[in-house]
Image (cartoon, rainbow, N blue to C red; front, side, top):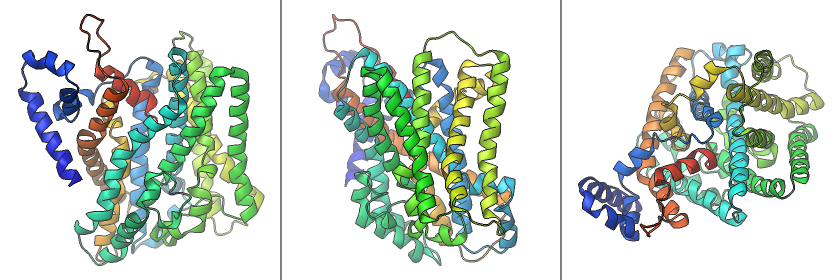
Length: 491
């Protein structure tokens, strides 16, 4: 019924938007009901999709970063879901656990850390810039964040709980799909409240959704930290440093105390039932164990805030040194993970704890270094690539693509009728298919759910001026693009 109502609103609003003439433009501007009705117009929302916020050119590189990260995550998830089923050449696959190329797939969880970095950076920058203009109640900020995230999330959860089991069949269909459906029917509320990584995590609806409660928890902390920085810069920065150090120490302490592995081993046993694995529940999906990249991103966000409008540029030699060092650290933080996949490796709790903690710090610091050089140094090739205009509309679909992509991978696994050979070419080919399907789904969700609800709340919290004698307000597209790019820091 909800889907029918939404589709009806979208279709009728689009028809009305296409056929209305100029004479009723003023009527629409003065009519709250007409403005509300037009929030569902596909024509209107399509116009806003490629619109970019260029208030700070240094941040336009984040469009490309978001897209590249989601492409890597979808590819990694395709590798993992396929290996959870029968593979004929598993000896070759097993060798990849210990190869530098294989670590891109088996240690690709650092690309999720990149999203945490971007989120922390953008939240800090956005809030500090906003506080310079006008202080906003922190409760309202958190509420707006919740409203921004939840409609699309709820629709995808609804799909998993009701329709997912009817979209295919196969030898393992009931075994795999029914488990997903039941988890979503029983625990949908933990997802909607963003507590699914702590409450019934072994029955979490959509295993990849662990990211969202983490990001939401960090956001609430970031709002408080930014208020303190705004009120008292010295105290705020000291508090941010303290929180960052605590976030770095926590995973070390947990891995050392519980004698856990330094990395999450993506072996078939784990891939078949990830939500039942202790390492996933204890160290991988908890907010308190994944926080360091976010707070390092906050530090970067403060630097971008201080640098906004600055004409300063890093010297060429410094740019090259920072860029080379950052890339080396990032590559090293991934490739070094092969050590722990070696059967001859002798477990050491302190060593494992240090790696579990510091490899995310290294990746985060390297990522910030690359971003900083691209924005303020001599790395124009990277800047031009990451700020390429076509990234803008694609980046606005990243959230929907993240939510929907795994359904296609799980579906393919459940439909498999036997064993097969697997190569990197196969994985990339299947991943390309996943990417097309995920972004196609995200495009539909954006036009029918995400953009309309964003428009509705933009009207509620920033209604258009009715007095035509007053100066015209900024176009709605401009207001919303700032919200999308700068404030909508998730994914």
